[in-house]
Length: 442
Image (cartoon, rainbow, N blue to C red):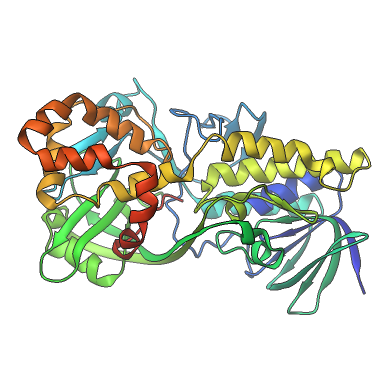
């Protein structure tokens, strides 16, 4: 028997739940397929932070209202309820291999004292749990522990089938099935995209960490000269415990070297791993548009690498509203959701170049250990406070440029590398970096 819905959502993560909730609250009949038993359970590695209003991201300047317990999206005029815990942090520091010199993104002291802007890590399970409850209250039909195997355009809209035998038809389907989107493959959306890389890493939640100015993101490279080579890491405060940190690194060998033998080992005197999560990142160039045969794509499914939590909520909300408008106007087709497609093109594809994202991931891996230490030491000013990954490289170069004459005099080979590096070259250099561990915020 075929069940007919206005929207069939595939994927019960941040973007899928926001889309289902929004559409159902607006009166549409909504079904949602999810592979997990519990949509609120977080299994994949995630830094659990939003990219907030110190810098525009997708032309939005979202922020957290502590008083209302809401994530506010003022440009797009909506908010998302949140009842979980949070923890503030105040800067992003790129660390030299000596664990001393650093490039400082943001004024830690000013932000920590309340004179500037703090960022926030949050409990993603609490966010998902709240969205799930709102979906249930709005009568979304959930089909859990389901694996979608077929998506076909029909005269009635989109037929979605699962391995478990379900067969639903939606006037539209919203694809919210993440980085490794099966719907992007099944519909042929990936045929016009460029495959970039696949990388896997593990995130460790660790206690017993002690270092100065600890309420920040810190990332950088250390070096094992006996086999591992460059070891990339990213660490930031955990929301679960005041003494806990999230450490993202590529595997057990690198974790052991970083915490016991590197220059950073002084931070880890009584370390204990409380739990682990893993992630496999498959990166494609962005889709030409987030639509194929009445399947509307949101979040990671059509974007480069990760849309982040910010982009997931934004696109899920906007896509659901676009479908509501399309059905109200009697245009159950591409023309009906044109507002979402133009919004996505303007605020995503035309605003953010995925190569700029790659720049910050690749940049610190093209230099020798001595060159890296030199760069981190020579940039002595505090740079613009931003954790937007598409803008990080630009902010770092703005800090380096005033020192180029000195660099050319003291380290001409380093100056040549800086002058020839570009977003285009970052794409070519990406593959070796993934072997060291691609830094991901999500």
